[in-house]
Amino acid sequence: MPNQLAKRIANFPPYVFAGLEKRLADMLAAGKDIIRLDIGSPDQPPAPHIIQALHQSAQDPTHHGYAGFFGTPQLRQAIADYYLRRFDVQLDPKNEVLPLIGSKEGIFNLAWAYVDPGDVVLIPDPSYPTYTNGALLAGGEICPVPLDVQRGWLPDFSALPPERVQRAKILWLNYPNNPTTATASLEFFEQAVAFARANDILLVHDNPYCEVCFDGYVAPSLLQVPGAKEIAVEFNSLSKSYNMGGWRIGMVVGKAEVVAALSRLKTNIDSGIFRAVQDAATQALNGDQEWLSERNDVYAHRRDIVLKALPAAGMSAQTPKSTIYVWAKIPSGCTSADFCNQLLEKTGVSLTPGPAFGTRSQLAARGEGYVRISLGQKTERVAEAMERLKSFGG
Ligand SMILES: Cc1ncc(COP(=O)(O)O)c(C=O)c1O
Image (cartoon, rainbow, N blue to C red; front, side, top):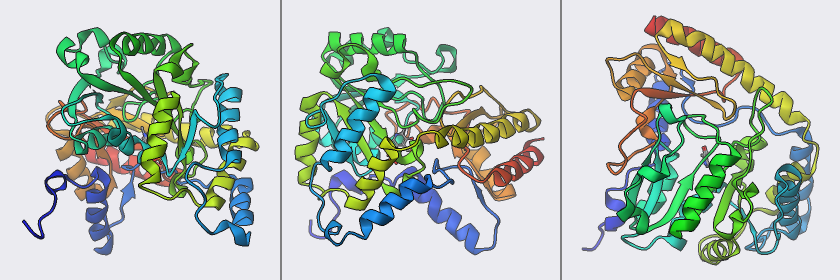
């Protein structure tokens, strides 16, 4: 039919935060004082040397054309050096590293490179919605991988239905985890690599929170498991690590065939990353890293403000060792969505309902009964939000 949307997009809802953004804009326009602890966007800027590198690069008159499809050799080398320094993982910057326009771009596009209609994709429930949405648009069949608090929000691979495992193309993992804030040990990653290898599944680990750690915790890379890069890739990002969410710069590293497939696909979709952003990212990865621990102290302080307030609101949470969130259990007797709606209407505090991280009917919405509280707002505003939460729930 002329003028009709493609079937694949006709029933495809906007990204969860896009809908919320419109609603909040209306409330703001009506004069409401909104505190957004829903989306995970760092409020602090990158360190001055990173902004300086952007500025300097943008002043070069030759840096404004298309910057090439595969990232500058300097950025690819900086990513490889970072993985070596930080995780003791060796990467070939030419074949095992690809810069991305934010990791969300690559996460979504990976499905186009790897998922044919009817292929099964194993996706944790709850999880970052882009794993699901990319797979669904490519025609994939979602097989939820249940996470629950009793297992520390880690999957039980032996409990997955064998018939679907047999047809599975991709297994997604993400630790430190959004939204549950759970972390995983290297031993767990070893089990995941063994499971993926035994079942001939591409293992994809998403690691954007690895530099946001507290209380001495140091997050590992999945690629630290010997042989992992023969069967796995890891997405990473400068968004949370270096407070560069709006700059749109991330990466995929690991198994060369996957990096090549995504590169080939991307040459047809985009035309590279602005040179000044690449130069700033290179500076971020190569330059001083000391500032990150001070930045993490700010998040840890906000985390503690939230944790202290929760009991008075009839809520509870485990203490996160990483990420920019608190994953909190709400009082029984209402759904997460109702809780967030009422809280927003009555107090102007916006949180994300747990089932938003397991959207679409294919996932069982294991996030029900939880809300995600973001720490990406000024400390005074986080504290103010917690006072409002206490008066709402207390
Ligand atoms: C688990 C996870 N993966 C990927 C992303 C995307 O990050 P970006 O596209 O900014 O690199 C996010 C952002 O919130 C995330 O939480």
